[in-house]
Length: 594
Image (cartoon, rainbow, N blue to C red; front, side, top):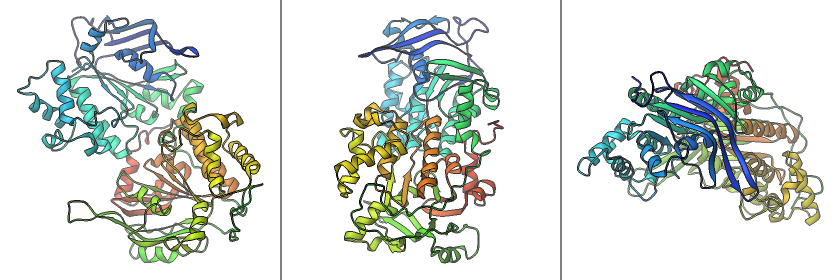
């Protein structure tokens, strides 16, 4: 049952945000981050605030809890919590409210947990600070708190450090800290954005159980509209610091009225992917081995011919003889990559048992098409990608690229392979050198492989900026001056610089908002159509995979459990694990008009 206090009048919202504006002082003058925001949140209710980065959703939440940066302040309006206006409240008063009455689950569990303090110690600090435990009984209450958050072996886990936890376990620890004091309101700021869909569902189910049992109101900050529809009773949509639409969650997302909300719904793969089919970019590709205009290659490359796409040469786990049949198909001449029996074993320090990260994986990548590998963290998908790039060596099995055994490549052949296979990494914030200008970042591979002279390289960089739809004014900027979507476009331009045949995309859009994510996916597909590129697309997000892939390989515990065309995987999944992944996609059952 939802709780009330004497200060809160009967029927009044627990939280009332009225005409709130937030301003940040910068060297370029004031920035109006939030303007005229009105929000009501009842006791025991879950409200989702959605919008892309910069929309003002997190700023609004931080204004409520009094944790705006030093250069930010609420310049107008009121924030009534249980009838008390928190705007202008003394810091001592806000410290007593934080944790005790308003809890917080921040976004990044790694940076929001103290890496040198044990998990139990961090929870104990919260309990002791609010006089909810004594030195004598704090250890017992810490274990109870961790157990309530769904962490197994809570007594042992309390003695561990954050780096010894998985991403899902760290998020549970943050939830435990946020709910340790039994607050009346919990602010959850993107609490599962970095987690796999199955782990995400487990975490959110646990959070929902805990808050429902305690009657806690939840303000959920997210850019995932499917998640908002499933977990919230009402949704507030923000754009450029203002609320553009709000109302019942299902109504807002199934029948959006504002153009911005309509754009969000259309762009969100977690909502729309089950209704949309991507275009199939099968083109008569040019000789993609040829260098870009005005750039001479380091050495002549072998001429290759176009061919019709081949089926992915990976078996369905439940088909008799599928492995033998798949390996026969793996030698199809129109596959640019043929993987057979790929295995990676790691020695575990202090243990007699080895760890099999990848076990007996076989598949092929048709020329000019996209093969996706999906699975949870630890499934072996990124290890497979790194072996494909020859960053790590396989324990056994083979990878053939354009008919050549990758493991046997040396000298000039290996150098040529590294030019023809390029990566795009997950995090556009850490994969670009912050000390390099955008021009230098893109031109670096051209200089390393001695492609053309300085004038030709400069022309190639400008062409690449055009290819990824970035203005020429970006050339002199640095990564810190670009948005996440712009940085990922720079990463794509760098990957295209050497005119590769295959691009290995390792979670390339997982760190991006839905609108930017949609733009990057569209860009990747357009570039594939224009240049005949082949993609190996690594992702834990099946909704994204449906939009980009022609074929899908599903991995679990290092093994390939199912592989087929994208259409078949999404309409007729055979393996229980694949069905489990699909069922975990937030919003996959919504009837969205797009």
